[in-house]
Image (cartoon, rainbow, N blue to C red; front, side, top):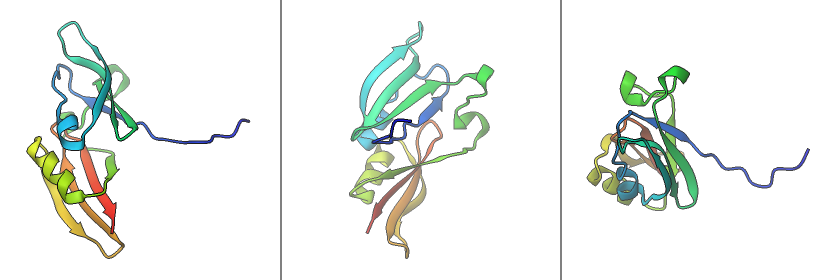
Length: 131
């Protein structure tokens, strides 16, 4: 078997059908939209974004496959960790872009500064840095 030289994760996040505006991610995290596939009504079917080279995708819900946005059930199964160089700056940008604070940024004994926000689509992000 061939060796794997580099491994990266590319989360697939689900959003409600009919969503047309995902600029939260560009405003909050400086994400760049790499490409988008839209439905006939202009809503987003799939969007590929990158945060400092880390790729993630947004997909509309697929009920037939059991893929739902966190909003549908008011809960999550995954928290997305985003390591940054300035937690407070990114938290403030996310809040200004429409995020809700779950846990304010603070320093922890284990050497990290962390805070949690919920994005407008229900996904929870742990914004963190090593101190």
